[in-house]
Length: 462
Ligand SMILES: *Cc1c(COP(=O)(O)O)cnc(C)c1O
Image 1 (cartoon, helix red, strand yellow):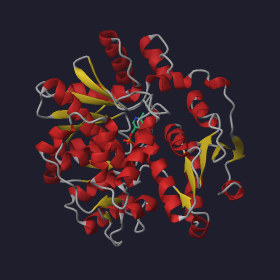
Image 2 (cartoon, protein in one colour):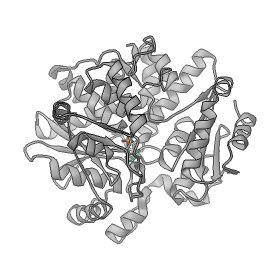
Image 3 (cartoon, protein in one colour):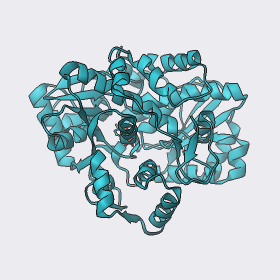
């Protein structure tokens, strides 16, 4: 499979080049030249596969140049780190299905992709005789999933900036208790925005970027989307077994449009999804886009679901490419207009096309907490605040004749304050968090100054 850019100004690249490139060199995002098609017979054959077996089937359709045994080995190592034998189990609760994506080492769905990406990076770097220094800024969740993805890996060093004393205690501990020699936690004396700005400035120096082989693990890497496609098929096969249904809804708590875009790819591959339900918190640019064709940026507000406090959805451009009939010139025109004016609006005929694939809604902070409380009272099951948004919007929009699968993107223990507020009891701590306060930590507190951080990276690069 070859990969092209949404902006159409690079030559098609191989899978391996696409992995290493991240963002396409023309500023666009990479997509496969064609989307493989699966039929009902293929889907039926998935029913009895384990998660790693299914991952092998799906990933093989997009990966090239990797011997099947090597791919199997990467998959087995990536999902062997999950604490549930089914990797992403589906549970039935309160009249719907919950796809639990939080059994990885950092208890959030980002592990599904980043465990695999970390192993794949190590494999490809070794093959190419290269090294990589990963730099990223985090407000909490992505940083720890990225750190766990590459800890202890050869030829990779990772530098993650987080705002000193401005992430939750659990998030801070998840990052700083990783003491592997290739992991550098930098607590900057500043905000998350300072961190992002510094990372951007460092990447903006192209000579420095090349000299140090800088890499990123942000949500624009195609492999992150690809790895997430697998669990849509997995969940469908489990629910079909249970109900004999011919189609399903998926409700997806959405921030950067990465997770739900993976569902869109699955749908285009032939997975019978009636609609993908896009659920946002009060940062609702994406649900305004789906419901009225209004994609216009607003100020970010803080909510109890911080991983969705996002206005600029970095994967949106991938969807735009398909919406605009795979016409890169149109994508370039739209993206230029968006960066000029901060808004795009879509006419009725395009809105109707969006509506064939998506429904959307949003939940306020109060509704989020109330959903956690009500669901807990009704079922005894504890939702994290992100998952609760998907449950609330999904219940509102899904029609009763078709099963609803809600993606559970984080373990409730990661967001103890919201759970305590909603249910009156703190969430049960999973084994991986027990005693985390007592573990040794490794973290450098550093000024939020680009030059200081650049020097730190040079000194500690691989
Ligand atoms: C990142 C994240 C999301 C949003 O996922 P996107 O792919 O950015 O849409 C939702 N919930 C949790 C817990 C997350 O960490």
